[in-house]
Image (cartoon, rainbow, N blue to C red):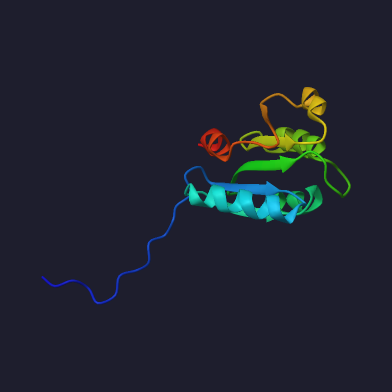
Length: 128
């Protein structure tokens, strides 16, 4: 009838699977990670689209990708979004930009756009 001496720690289950954050600016990366994790979702981080592709090809638990449009590397966030739509259509994709919002017109079907600065609560609600 007593309580156990050891209780396993509570494990935070992702609300909508793992969110892959693709962002080359460290402060934005840290803030996005903290806000999304505070909402109960798990995150992974990539500094560019090439690293994101490596993660996506090696895992099957990524439910959403949140990517900046302008990044270093072999492709930008729009190209990454297009590849994700073709190869992994079940993965939700959100792109963001503060520099060139007119690029949002070239988004693949089913990809959402959030203009910087964005409201993190709207972003988290979108992932849910």
